[in-house]
Image 1 (spheres, one colour):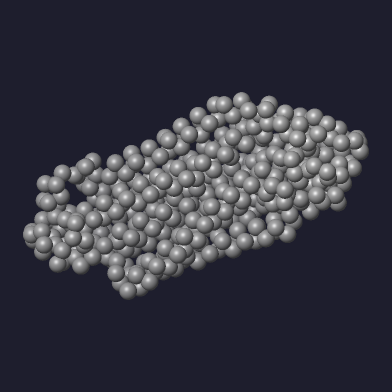
Image 2 (cartoon, one colour):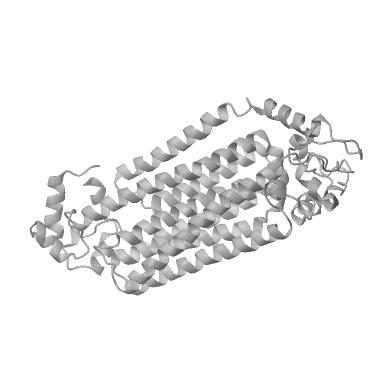
Length: 318
Length: 131
């Protein structure tokens, strides 16, 4: 609903107690000269931040598109790879972000009501929670780096999937797959029986592999990346266990790119909140001037929003 | 100004804080009541627990994905409507935001239409390269 100028002026006369144009600016030192009223300034900024959020949605949209294509083509990769992610930490981080969204929304309310102390408290809590999120992310990332659960040709996991706790939990201790998940994956499976022969058409080797020794066991014949580390490639899958699908490392390219870009946004959010914390401590914000807090909170909610989708898409694959 | 007027459920609280203005038209924007904030937060936490719990139930991969996405969308709706106060915002901002979702869904669905077109070529190519 676009307001006409006349409406804004009449609104202005309310807010500015009937002062003229310039008197309004004298009353509100924060009011830029090209805005009529604080409300006018606020709503213009708000439209601006929404347009920025639109670009963010489109930005992440590209990654969600990549995700959709790969999951559509290779669901078995996602089933296989999600065992390498820890649902517990993912859920903890979801909770952390939701609480920080609450404190961000609360901070906007505090600014609107001129509650200076509460405003500072809520900003501090938001920053602390954002740091918690990054700490959890650090725990997850360092675990993956340690175990070589990395994208592309660096994917050379120390533990095969049937050795993972998450897998054992879902399938019983010996990883006796019942084929429920593995249905799609089964198509990619190479023969269980160890065959020293080079892989055939069902398990196409990857460009990264030329000259590498063929995996001695048929257990993980198709993971080209694994050929670099003969030790892991040699491990034999117990009967019925979920095998490593071809191109499994693509999942971790997607995982690291999506969570990494999201993490960068969290860092940007922390920087923004620190700047606003300084301004809030100076008492800059009040009922007529809380736009910056509102805009930062909107950005922060969007970061939360993206995580709300990333969590089930990456951690909760069935 | 209709959007401004229907936002005055909470203005009684607002006017306490800066009662120097006349009560009715003082707020620049709607102030979200604490109870509503906490309620939305509680709902988001409960939905998070549900979405984790529901993965232990096997509905088949497709239905599990749809359930997870449905829950995520409800959560996203709550965040956008209340935390991002689109409910009380100018409708034009909602339009702008929905526009982005429209274009992202167009982008993804159009791309998915022919996702299988090239897979045989890719498979063939990687077989040739490998052998």
